[in-house]
Length: 251
Image (cartoon, rainbow, N blue to C red):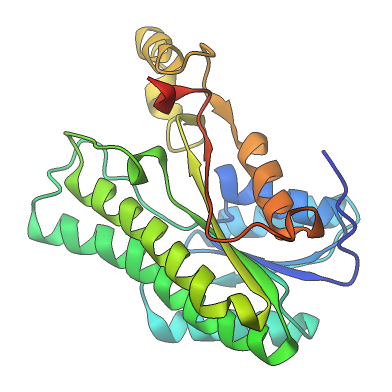
């Protein structure tokens, strides 16, 4: 894991109770940033904080349903109250209704609320703080399903395409304010979300076969990309949907 020299900086990570969010919160802390850990899963969020503190980092948990504007406002305010500023934000919270009928009104509405409206609400609050302090960096979680079609999941596909659009909008809107906005587009990643499928040997073979590299990605591989995008090493990168998929979209 690379140390990007983020001492004195503050990062906010949503969906940080496990998987990609937890790995990224740990990666920010490894680089020296204080981390506001957020999730609807209080147990998972607290575990992430414990892991960061055990490694010598600083972290605080704040529960948040990103589809609720008042909760997002409170989350961002808590980061500033606790650590004094907000330099980096990883808007990662999302849901994947695998197996559900996303044309169902309720499923569609929940997908839209968490995956797309949630990103907008986070960007709105984060950008206000970052503009006031003279800059920052935001990364949103999209998906390869935000770049290509998916015949089984209209809600997930539409919202992840929407995240790419919001990312490009934010990059243009806040470029002169010193705020960079990018997205990561993961392929099939080994996380608690995919664990039930991967536990089946035949399904695991299928998941591994979905990329030319012949394996699922790891959460750390996404985390490393997110922290790089926020770091000064990516100072001229904005509005970019970074694909991290083992070659799955090359076909």
